[in-house]
Length: 364
Image (cartoon, rainbow, N blue to C red; front, side, top):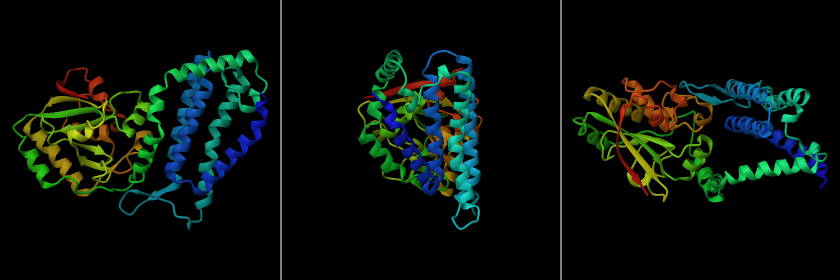
């Protein structure tokens, strides 16, 4: 098969895509493109065997480039807002197009540098391009096919998670999110806080780790490689006061919301693990007060932070980040980690000193 015929059409598609990003790309789109380019480059030079040290340095270099790209895009495409947040740049400012050109140019920079390093020094660890593929031998093709089959065998869950129905569900939900401004306020009623006050005699907080089986949860699992991808906190063992950051389940805006056991277990493969953590009455009351403050001032779900590991405003968080910050507030955090890097499974896996006590599991 002559694959050279695909060389120019592919390049034309890439150039059109880059032009589209330059003209129409938002800050979130630029970030997704940077991350996609990073993952594509990783796949391209990690699959061939050998040169582990070179691959390690390339991984570190590409990770550094990705971090620089994100920071640069934040500085160039966002401006300080009037309320302390960040807002997109306006097309009326003089530097609008130069800023966008720079952010578009840096998409190609890691590609060019990594290709120069690998092809000029270690060409055997770099998977061939479309043009180069036209000259490879049958044995090399067999090797690539064998690797592809191996990855395909491991991708069963990934295929299910990326089904058209799941993608449509996630995309329809994503338009409600805002990683820079508060979109949720007052979702917790005074009835909720009355229930919390009734639990003050119980000197425990309850950490809830769940696998909801939702489309978003399954897609997050592809990135984290973990089965349990949601964390919540409750003031009572029966989970009548469970709260976390979530998408709102088409009831509330994304942000800090009350949760119900029925919502967490509505999928057939859902599972919930409930753990208790000792605390004082004062610590419990202070956590309740901080949740009240967030409820009154506003919140939003930190979708972008799942990738960047940063919060652009104080009350913009994702679920595990929220639970960790509530524990840290009162000195109850039993492991040391930046909140933006905390995953739901960390609450179990990093409990080296057995601070948690297992209470029960709900599995379907």
